[in-house]
Length: 341
Image 1 (cartoon, rainbow, N blue to C red):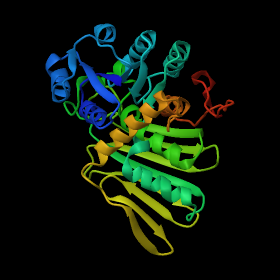
Image 2: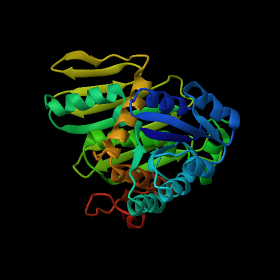
Image 3: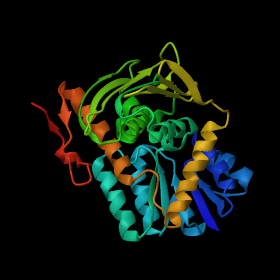
């Protein structure tokens, strides 16, 4: 039996807890949050212990693995502490707020001999898996272009205060919501990012960006445009994949639709349990990794997303394009970012 702990009783903690209850060899043993009542709300349906100090939980709860669901800048110290205690780790995206922190997390887990998996939930949502299946069958040919548009809300009071702290969150709408868009666009596009341009907006008097746009070229030539808009007139969350012989529209609100030869068909219709199902599939993947399997999402991919977001901030500051230097695994280090003259 794998005894699992959760650090952070925020919005998605209930999804993690309910997922653990569906896996026969997993027991949710402990939940930790600085707010005792928040931890209790997540823990009590499953009989888990409650902690307000994760270091105490690591010492006392007899865990084998932990899910880290906390403000972004805290991921590094918690992952390193978990590795020091011999615990396998599933940490929510973004992996960290700097590439250097990503690398420290990877090294700590490698040296401790524990698994590190990043919670890039887009790879497990049913409508995205349906799009993956369509691309894999080959009927639409190669991916040529992707447009990703997602709305959010970064008005004061719309979310916990830490989201508005650059030091704690690593940025604003692009680091948080844009990370999802980059994740799925790079995944569907099939290659790492080679170069990009970006712009950001700070509205509503908040200290982090509320809106952003990124234009990317992947190393295989696929062009990607990403827009994140706060407080838009209409709620949207769509990735549109343009292929040689048709298009795929993928959205949690409208499902997954394929357009080919003048005809549109629906390959996935939204279901009320889609988000919960995504978290369940993600936890299943993590447990398979603990049994020696390979994760669906590599740490190199998660690291690359952080790298691209930081490069986007650089492009927005300078007003010019940024090129990402290629390394052996197509994931470059932060110091390798160079402006294109």
